[in-house]
Image (cartoon, rainbow, N blue to C red; front, top):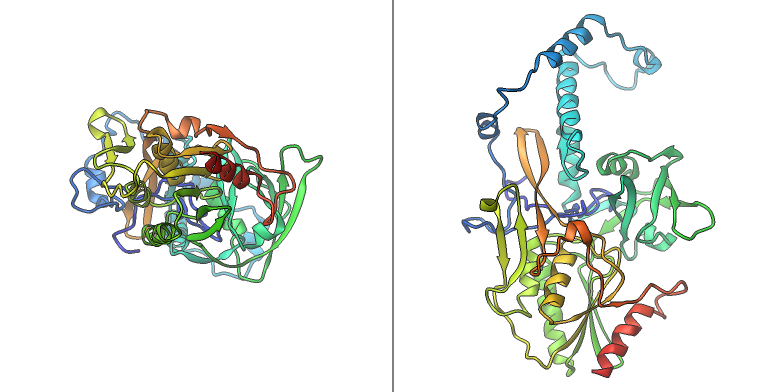
Length: 424
């Protein structure tokens, strides 16, 4: 993978659920402008030697680990039937088996943190991760996160197998191909949901208020993450932003140009179902509406010295005559919440819809070896008013539940946004 990977904030923009994935994510991720300003918005890729050199584990007793290792060496015999009967893959060498044990030990250590966003990526998983953030992939088109340790749908992307089948934000994945999904990490779920284009995966879903569990048979397809869609309705210009990927800033700027040519001062920025992406994109988009230097989001880590404030670049091209509504729902996460929080708290727009997802942590991708990495949570995001996105999400000023019979022809939340703007 190239060294200029961007930091992830997301929801693991579908590390494959898109069939991967944002997403940070994985468009899940989020680009960040570091204080030193040398490389804006890139993953911090610390050399592995640096990481080892800075370790302070002198007070940790590793003897139980080595004792357990010796017991495995002396006594273990693989009693699994497939271990002696399978001929589909060549047996592992002793060195390969030992390496797998090392990967397993690191995985267990990271899992002990209890953080669903901190994940060790051994070689195979690292390769899948890199494929997931490439933008196009095969899958079913859902973004997943963990809510109360349950795999939960953040959003189903438009024009994907999941969206067409009727999967909704908030749906809880109970089974994947009939196997219990309880306790799975996001990465483990991704491995099961990903697959060859044209093949089938069956998801068993628990949905709030549904009388029974739902079963969806989905055919995996080629997934391309969209960016924007624009339209006008009843004198209101609508910009639908689907993700904060690397091309989002240019796409949003072009949409704003169309808005200014439309001859209206009423704007809806629709962030529903947007699972997030690069932090840099959220900062850039917010800068079209805010004066230079205004805080957009604050990144707080382990110490006061690590705090980073991301500020507006000050494009600020709109006057006070602009009337704006920002639409959000339970599928609005990560960078969506950063943008929505900043614009609403500065009074630039009214939040309408449903409470957002609440994905407000920052991950760094750090190499462990040449072919393995550790994605680890290093900070949380706070709105300009100090609201923890991760702890609370955002509650709209005007709460409007999604209509049970909403479709492409009738959108309860969008209609409310238009009504609000036309009354101003």
